[in-house]
Image (cartoon, rainbow, N blue to C red; front, side):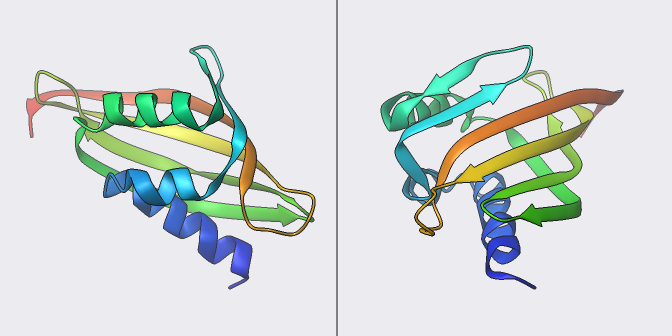
Length: 125
């Protein structure tokens, strides 16, 4: 497993564990995270606010299906399950496109996320 692939697994696991410090430390000060069809986060301060808003998501599970790395760019696709505020389980498929700093330091400077609801369970978790 490459250093970048290992880093991306840790980065995604940080979301599951709500490790906001790891996520913030893994990005550049001018990070741009575009959630296609939703919002764009600009800078570490905005990222910290958004991460704190997401910390109440419970039962989050992420499964990475594949990782593709090309120079200072990478793509990760997989699925995630989580409970909504009413306790219903939802499944999503995602694809995240990462761009890292050009100087070789393993920090994310740009992230584009595509997330699609693939199923909705009407039963409580």
